[in-house]
Length: 214
Image 1 (tube, one colour):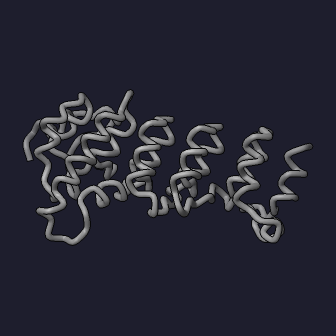
Image 2: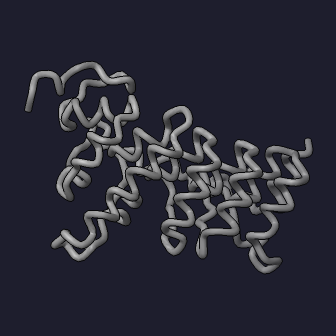
């Protein structure tokens, strides 16, 4: 690999697995270079933290047009692919070492346009928890991103709702002491689940609610 590929990246590590031209293109918005990516590039051009080009684009400032262009470019590869899995779906579902997809990144950095776009592109896929046990929905509720919560609920057919220490979105909502978020949390649990859904300390939702009020 070219020596330029070992330059210091914005995320604070050396680029040793991703061609520098692709990393810099994603970082600076040079979509014409990214359009040259092949199926193998989509799968194997990774930073040491195993971030893909889409991960990098999804957390940049004003990332929508870049993410949109990347997904469209991946779709153009579908007819040429031999793996049987669409290039765009492969890109959307790839996880880094933190077990986060580009969708997790878009939620974390609060990019509503990107979140809406990604949920509409792959509505049937369930985005699971990262290494900290946080799903995108849990992250949105915990951070108070009500607009993102609405998008995820309305667009995803099966939105995972678990969080750290076995908590659910309702635990996160109650901890926030925000009635709007609490109402959102209740929408994910029926009455029969209240006693069964416990966090890492063995407290169900009602017990947790009582503790948080003290």
